[in-house]
Image (tube, rainbow, N blue to C red; front, side, top):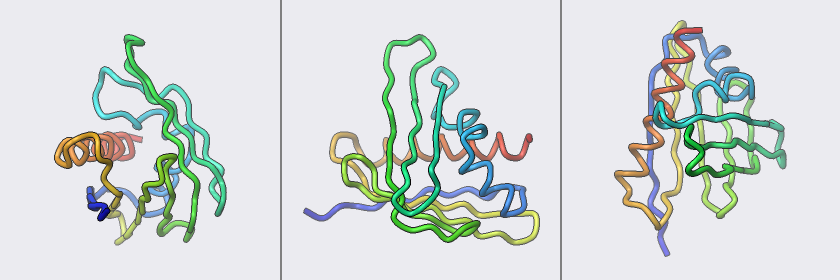
Length: 138
């Protein structure tokens, strides 16, 4: 079965190192890692090394639904890019292309088969938009 890839991107008004830190450090991840204001990310951990595990708890603020997002790192180029494999076997790559005080952040991931591609893209883009908003404000 051919897996379709989805790409979302944003340009953050931030130097690349700050963009990287805000994307990868748990104390920042919990502040932006959700698609809408009625969701939250109460906890995150990140063992940023090849074979290390990323984990983030995502849940509705009203407690009606939640899940743990987990992945294992396969490749890391510090400050530039990383790839990981999610618990269901899908892969993702995140890259940071810094140009002075602007950094393009691009996420490409394998689509899952349960939800429409546009819905998946919208959700991941909303999370990336939250990341941009948070990073530029802090």
